[in-house]
Length: 243
Image 1 (cartoon, rainbow, N blue to C red):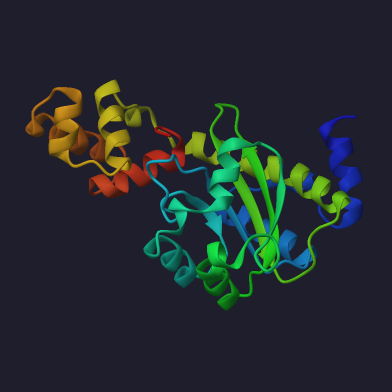
Image 2 (cartoon, one colour):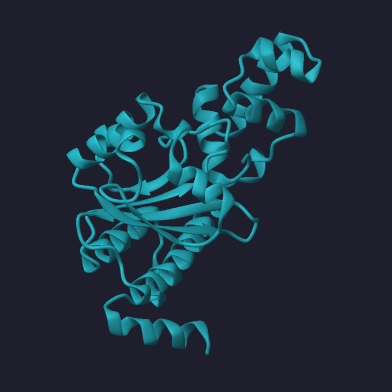
């Protein structure tokens, strides 16, 4: 069965995957995801690049989401990425999975998580690991208060999630201009910055002077059309120049 035929078949449950190929902007995909979320009676969605173990903040790895900004800020401020069983699961498995903050795990390990997410009406939902043609890994999440999805719904959402991430990857590739190609040293410096290292620490790691490290980071920021190293790291992660 061709992709077109599969898309037509899936349109029977209210979502036409073929629609994705005609979407021209990230905001168009956001509206598609909003419609998908509502169709399945979820409250929230998130499309994210899987953060490396050394950089667990959600804000810099989120592609599109309708999470309230306060929730994302709380997640990062409370350091929940360091102990998140969701991120741990995503790193060790490529299978979709259901989460239920009310019933799945012992109260003592998830009290803070349940309290924070409960404030925003997220008690249970599902995560779908995805990847693009370069091997860059990510996930698409849906959350709310509805019962956990059925096996059939999980299969449907997994199929749609793969297409959504691939379409967003197309936008990332289009967003990379020839002048943005980074050198090996610029990439190294950005990767270590993403890992939380200072210029002095990066200099020790790479055997360079601190001045040289700053030069590479400034040059990378200019190539990426950003104003500082923090923005350069965020954009490089978003477009897949670093992982």
